[in-house]
Length: 103
Image (spheres, one colour):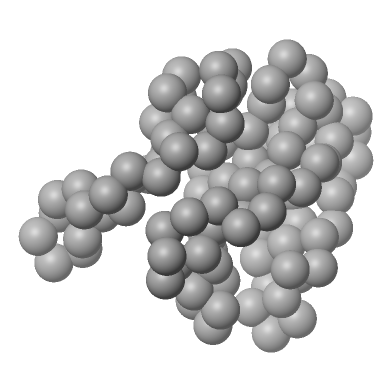
């Protein structure tokens, strides 16, 4: 679960509904958006906006750490993944575009 204003992602144990760890993402984000996952690669993706530029944090589900930060369009508004092709799609509201990231 992303935490608006804190720049972190909570990792939640689904069996106990408790937070098991907190993953730092970015400094001073103005917004964190929904999270998408690729269950085949155990990778988590979070799009966020700092000022008007958008980025995508790529997080390893094994280590709970950010492995990459990828620039995307302005004000990313949603994320979708295609696990079969390891592709991530980010809808960018501010730039009226879709960023396609091969993960």
